Image (cartoon, rainbow, N blue to C red; front, side, top):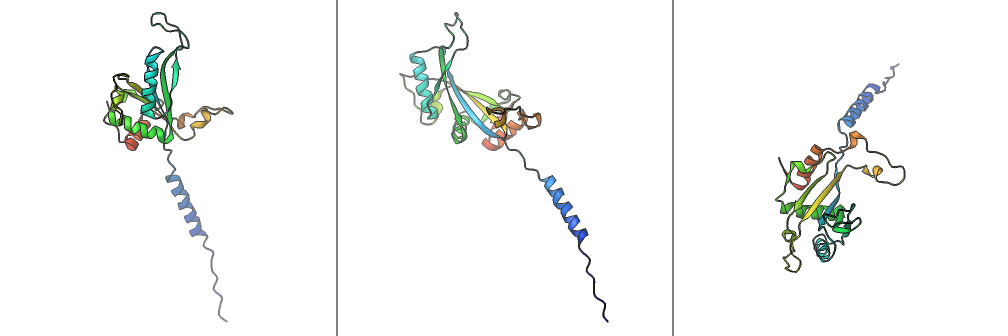
Length: 196
């Protein structure tokens, strides 16, 4: 009588394989990549009237989007300001329009940004002294020359919880962006040099 061969279940090998796959999952964590949430372009005039209308036409020509007026928050007799008086205009760009405008604005600055323009929340801002430096813009003696401030808001995925109307919450500190993370993102994404 020939004895039957008994096959032992491969429990040790399957256990080691599951351990290896678990360790690989721990090692390869999905990194959180920040993104440009919005780009705000502002022209401050300081007074209402024809000058403000010219600034609005310039901003609309540069950004291809209709601007809104910015209003004074206080009354100042020395500057001739009263509360809720229109003193400037701004445009908020998001998604693809924000990135394309940011690329063209950074070209004017030769892809260089000063380090002091970054705040602790990961946002940064810079100025463009002349609107005619943008591609397709020409000098018009009837309008003149306008400079503008560009503020860039950079966020991590999941920042929606602090903007939503229902069940609004704070962003945990471990999930917040800081200055160094934004510098790394801007240099890699837009090929920008941060100058000290």
